[in-house]
Image 1 (cartoon, rainbow, N blue to C red):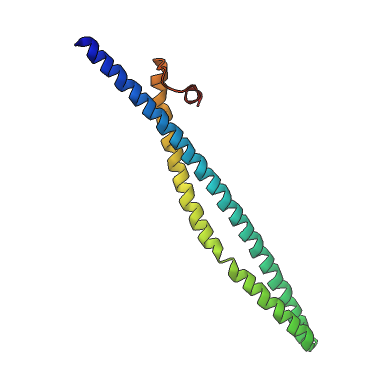
Image 2 (image 1 turned 90 degrees about the vertical axis):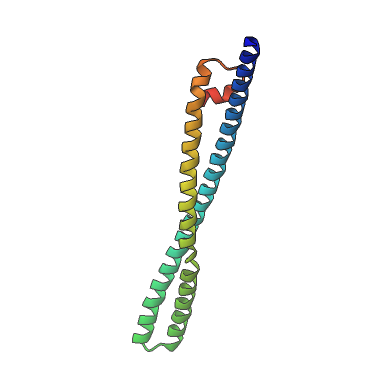
Length: 144
């Protein structure tokens, strides 16, 4: 009876250790996936900021050309400047996506921080098990 209890207890410990190891691997995978998503969103944000800067430069140049064309009463140059201004405004309107990108970035960042905390907490739970040299905890989890 006592041997059976010990066997059941040891088996339960092995199952818990194996489940925890699997949970850590899954948490690490989730963290890695979120890190990749974060990198992608940050790249999109940089791209949008670049587009926004280009649009602003185009608008500034168009405004100065339009001002010069009006002063010199050059209608052809004024038309060109107006087309440039319209193009810059269109480009600037396309960068409204930046708000959406930043909202996605904030959500991903929150999820990433939570996933990293979960992973850290799980690793802390593995450390006491490792001290007892549980053979069912994969070596790669011991080093983490």
